[in-house]
Length: 150
Image 1: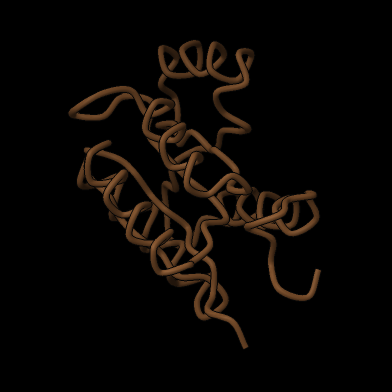
Image 2 (image 1 turned 120 degrees about the vertical axis):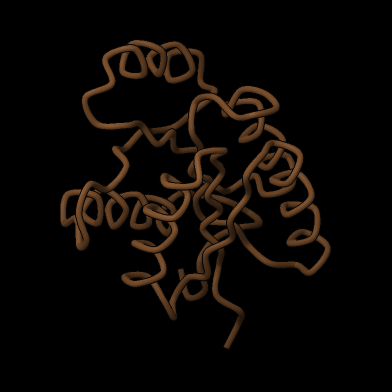
């Protein structure tokens, strides 16, 4: 059996990082592992390490803004190492500015999807979105990062 793929969460906000990563760990383990990064630089180092270890990344979930850059730039770098990974922006519920800002990376092909940060635990709407994204990842034609058996 191959090692489980990773879900990489990138955000500089500690509360968002905790909420998203904890929800993913509770629901997706043991089929997926969760990696956390608090900056674009840390995300780059994590993606390099995973690539060297020949580990797959299924989803890259990133805030729009990071302490050291834009989330879409961090996702773009990770995607160079893990070309099959889906790029997903995580937005704060009710943040109108973020809802407007996410349209640009989506329209320019710099992100594949977006979802909202979970508000409660368990957040079934968050998990439904993640389940759909993982199903898309499993079924998408990719040469390097596909799930085993597909």
